[in-house]
Image (cartoon, rainbow, N blue to C red; front, top):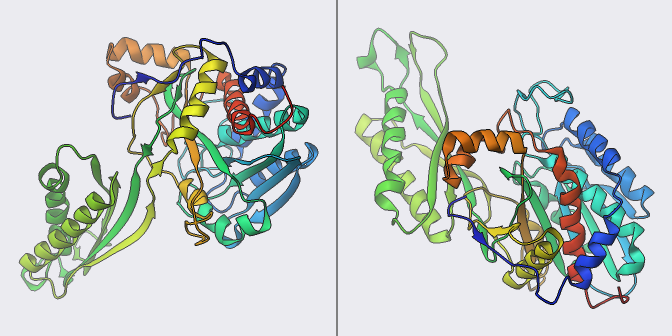
Length: 447
């Protein structure tokens, strides 16, 4: 989170809206114990991107039991996506999305319900997302007499690899199922449990993966003069790349360049023939992204030329996530109803963050985006803070009053220690229910 938190929408002086009142009614008697059991089960059985078959089956079964027309395997080879449709009369079509995949991380939380899949962990909270989505879908189905329209519930695979949303669109998501008028999604995040972070406009950055291969001349470690050492050249490239953000990007721009992997060689005494470098860029504008890519290509080529490499390096853009830009009006409406449901001071604007999401590809896959049908779809995406109170209070005691220092002191997404507070299960259901009802508001029965 890149800027101090600012208060966002507050409850109306006129009192809670119909959507807020109905959301509180529909979620007053949530089966919290059962939902917490669902969360623990999902956490014990994490599945990597595009392999979420068990998770998808659990979600699909719950949707069928709640009365949804349910389809599995949406996404083809891109992953076992789930779609549930609840048609409930005239009105808008609202899409609620939860992502399902886990990460190749070895869990170190020590929880009694820790991962039973070695080397795989729900370290990003997607198990919580599926739990929230399930609870919201069931509550809205049970309270269908309070709203009118069509609810589209999407369990998305392969968010971590940035391929799941596009795979579902390519597999006919908006041809086989009703096209939504608006999309809603949320994400667990570090921070004292009980806050809801909304930003109208840019909320998450683009991510771009880049792979560099340095081509050298291999040989015996005792005769470096007969080789062109790609390891040394790669080291120069890595060092030089650190100046891209600090010396080539304006201070007013936000950008990150991370060298996530460097690989070369097989033995202590062998100079290898090539070295591989893997980079990740985080940017908030297309112009900055292109400038950074040009700098990477120039630096890699220059260092290889200086080393006398037999040929130019291979520089490949291997994957990317788009920027996440909330529709301002949609996000303000959802933020306002969240303020009504949870009370003053619970809804904040932290500004854009450097993390990335493929959720916007679901919107771009609608009219005018990747699907080429004309228009694009509005969406709202927000964060639900989930750090247990005792963990946050201990971090605050160490870090003092600085919010960014406090956030740095608690386990974050992708950490082997990431463990959301189970107290967020009910509120996370309530955020989706109230957001959906706000989108349905004015279209259905009097509530």
